[in-house]
Structure formats: structure tokens, C-alpha cells
Length: 225
Image (cartoon, rainbow, N blue to C red; front, side, top):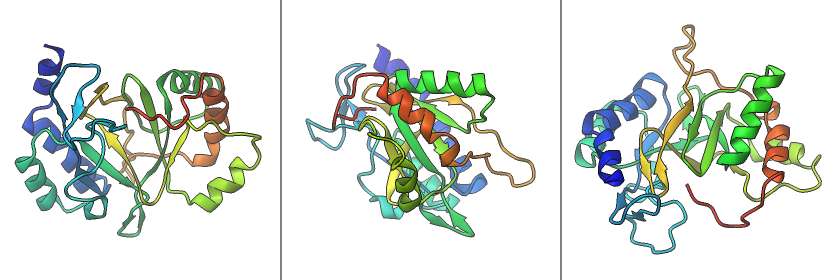
């Protein structure tokens, strides 16, 4: 029943409209991802068919990640053909005049702790996409060389904290993953001047995210959305 209700929330219009908002209004390159099949929440299987899929219903399949686009005609056609496909953002991908948003993701418990600390310190965060198991903070584009310099200041970085830059991807609302619905924990705040959501710099968030991730058990290489 919970799976059915989740799929009802993901109507053809809601998924396509969300994809068109990202692509046409915000110029975020997106593409359809896999879907969840069979079973029931919180452990739905992935349409990719891999029994050990670590991101069920939340990764690219066909088309591949490089096909991500901001073209509203292609985006509309994709979700007309695959109405329940997940909404995948190609992080750091080149777009006209710059690059797509990047992201940092971490376990939900650590994410909640981090946001509470940001709020207490008056640090502004941007859009935060959440599932029952992981939270994803969207940030301004960054490079791995820049990230590496910042992480060198830490003795160790938990593997549960993931970095999504050029060549990476994250799932956006309102898709359904194998562990639950993707929703906005913090809604995108669109700046009138630019017409796109405001994004913080990665360096303003990473220290707190490392500390919050280190405070909970590290699942190692296991990653589940």
C-alpha cells in the first residue's frame, strides 16, 4: 500500500513538471533515471535488475549520464515516455555560461545534525534533497582539486560523506528510491535577479559536514538512498 501511495504522488505531470523546472527555468542538466519495481517500501528493487544495486531507483540507466540536458523538448519527451523515472541531476556538468550545481551527501542523521548547527550559527544553506536514509546539499560548482585542498586539513574523512562534482549525479524530488520518497528538506530559494536557486559555496559547509558524518557509525562503502 505504501508503494502504491508513493507512486500516486509521482504523477506524470508532477515528475515532468519538476524535470522541466530544473531544466528550462533553472538551467540544470537532467535526465531520467531508473525506477523502483516490485516489493514494498523500504526495500524496493531497482529497474536496472541488479540485486545488489546500491542506489535503487536513483541512478542513470538509459540514457547514460552524458545525455543530461536542459532542452525542455527532450525533457518533456523523456518523462512522457517514462512517467515514473527518477529525476537525475548531472552535477558539475557544463551548461551555457558555467556549470551545473554540485552536491555533498551524507547519512540522514548526520545531515539533520549539520543543518541544526548551520541554523544555530546563522550559516545559510541552499537546497537540501532528502530521503529517509540520506540528505543531499546542493552547492555552487567546485572542482576536486579545490575540494582536496580543503579535506587535507582533516585527519580523516568518513566514507559516508560523498562528493558529487563533474561526472557525478544526485536524485532530486519528487522521485521514489528504494528506501523512500525524495523530498525537499530545504526548498530551493530562487533569486529574482538570476531566476535560479541560490547555492552556497562548498567551503562554507564542508567542515561541519565532515564533523557531523564522523559522529555517527561509518557504513564503509555501502551507499543507499
